[in-house]
Length: 207
Image (cartoon, rainbow, N blue to C red; front, side):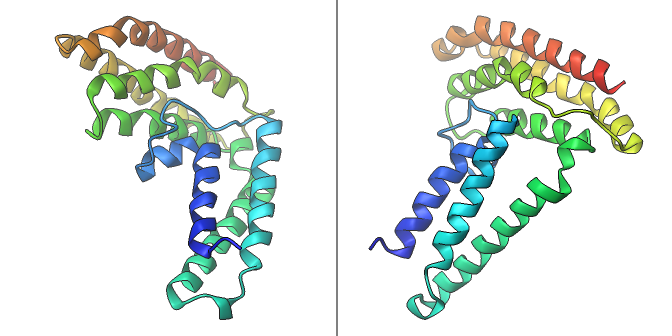
């Protein structure tokens, strides 16, 4: 039987694949070019992950684990319960337009601000996320939203999200002496334009 540590490692491998923006924030960069799947099918996969891992983690009895593993098990089970509540009950994406602003910002900003890899590699991840932004925005459930305060705040903050796209393009222009940056500059510029179009569509929808 696999050890608890081995199963936790497998847990995070699956978790980061389903929640790539959170993976970026945590410093796991295998999925830096991806967005979470906000479609109904994506929600089903997320819930299946939550339920399957809740059952598996509960199969490890506390008596079989040391103190550190017992704490990790409790924390993971608590996070899974919170995730299930958020998906089925809270459902912020259906009433809080700010959830989209935060998601998009969190998907781009760390790739710009954290020097964890060569600039060209990070800009390629940004380009690929920007290319996927129309699908992310288009996957929003409807109708949206019911909170006027959150919606008006989201509309004001969308300009800041667009500014991140501009910063990425500027970083590419400033760094084009690096062959890796020069190779991605054109793709990034086109992706940024696609991202701006997606933001404009989101803005019009919220307005």
